[in-house]
Length: 382
Image 1 (cartoon, rainbow, N blue to C red):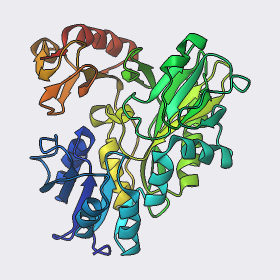
Image 2 (cartoon, rainbow, N blue to C red; image 1 turned 90 degrees about the vertical axis):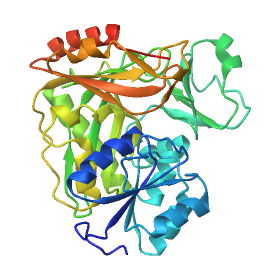
Image 3 (cartoon, rainbow, N blue to C red; image 1 turned 180 degrees about the vertical axis):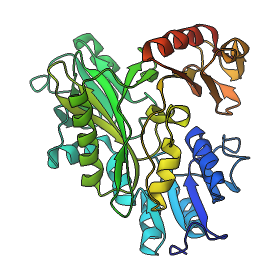
Image 4 (cartoon, rainbow, N blue to C red; image 1 turned 180 degrees about the horizontal axis):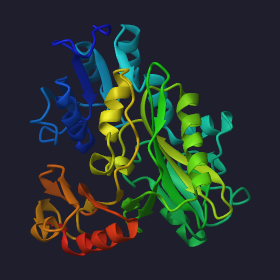
């Protein structure tokens, strides 16, 4: 099965995860008439009615993932938290998995991920491992510092900054890493693609501004406010990461740019990423099409931008849970250059990702003004 060409009428692309990333990936796969099969634990997931075939199942259950993958010619992901033992067995049986089980095993565990950077001389903030229930060694790191759960953290959860000894009672009790807090840093992301043929291309760096409570991206700016030299260095660093992983597919590399111009890799995601949503409208080739090109070993597309852009995440408003209502959508859709993406999640809750809006303009500054209007008027309530 693994030897079939994607253009064969019976080629089957398996996607583990049926959320918004899978939905936008399938939209690109449809253009190439690729048969898509999705496995997701939520029977009402956004991919439910868009995939060629949908199966309700546990992404962390060996039998579910293995059984699902056996009838696919290629398996990819839209979420990292999947059973890698099942994926390794599928690889043994000749089914291609992108990203590979070995790459996912590293990315799934933030401690292993940080060790990988250290062992491959990829610059990253100082860190150490903290066993379940232990207190941090304050002789190694001063306040403030960052605590990240080794596993299960996702979409801003499982990460916190501790500013003083009074915060120690809030510490996570599961295995985690303790990491130096990088102060006054600009946070950027570079999305890089690599095919089986070894072709590598980077999208321009984007700048991210995070929501102070949800720890999720609130605004994303492209191009990032960095120098041409810093842009080159950031792309070179992203290429180092994907080549060190020997990975095929799309990799989002999040970085800190320190005030003195140093780049430190924060973490990576081996899939389409929130920091690349803007490419659907602002680039000639979106991150989703690029991911397909990479895993199908097609020529990678251009990463040139058509125009400047700002993206904002549509998050569930605090204090609202239940059946979703999008308030103010008519007002923002009157604006030129504004594209609204609703993910199709039927229930909202505080800070849940429910959609995103991309704003295109001649300059980032003008797009930012429009984004502020969208932020004030478009609300996700129940």
